[in-house]
Image (tube, rainbow, N blue to C red; front, top):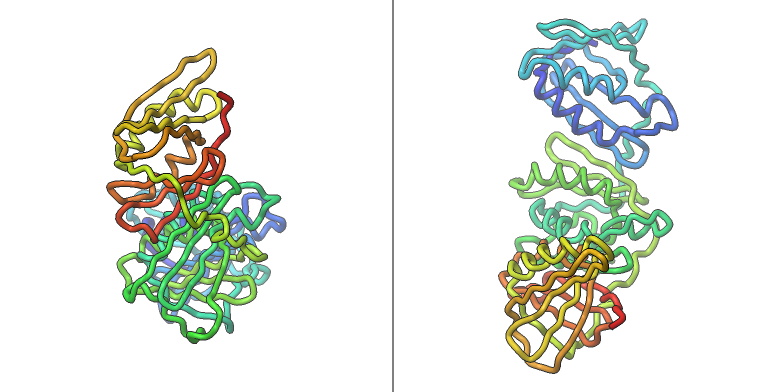
Length: 385
């Protein structure tokens, strides 16, 4: 195999696929990147695959001889990254010894590769469900919920985001057991075009691991101007395909919790805050709150100001008042300040509503201007007076 390509394009491709290369491989070849070249199309393709997450990307180059080889990811990445920007790079593979000669105008490197025969094939979905998804809708659904996923491996299903693709809208949800984020995106523009789903078939519901979603987010961000990305799902495997990239990931097995049951139907108290003022105040109070337990208290009385405070024993305390619209009896409630900030920062509305019943039951934050689109439920913290 012999190829010549641009350093920048090769480097970008390596950086992308190396995210799917195993850090602790169960087999030496899984620490490698698969490089294939096709003389007929002058396409160079790179693949990383750790048996859970797979990323493949391709770009144009000059292919003098077709072939395939796997190359140690870490050293290949470091070499190509340090070569002169935009310079031509050639790779020449000796078919007999699997030696790889990498040359630029500054020098050369010799690496030992492993034949590609033992490299696992990326799982491609041949049957099952295929959808055309709107990249900007999917990105919005992902970004508004990924922050609330759990990281406890004993609760595997909660370490990902659950996506439900319905006939004309997309619902995403995540929870770590202490809070729940749900986003609903839907209108004719965002409808999911389902090739294999008729209107009376069940909606497609998949839970995708957070680690895979971080890489899918990058792919979809690059393609957000495109009208659609192809998604295939079958037997616990999801594949995203755009023009020159493929990401495949296993889904998390099991039935996602019925989160709609957790959200109260009615609320006795509703507080209306300016979103930015609330975030700014919480960030200032968090300086003290984070010194100890991250607890922030909100005191609401029948005035037009809400008091937000934190008390860190032996360190100090902080208190701030911000405008609020509320009429009703005095009310105190406490939260983990980090949970509040992470949820509020994905709300784009100028004002946000805090809805609750008691200081010990779930509280809900919703954007004032789009009440049904995003719901963020947080369990309050019980504080001894």
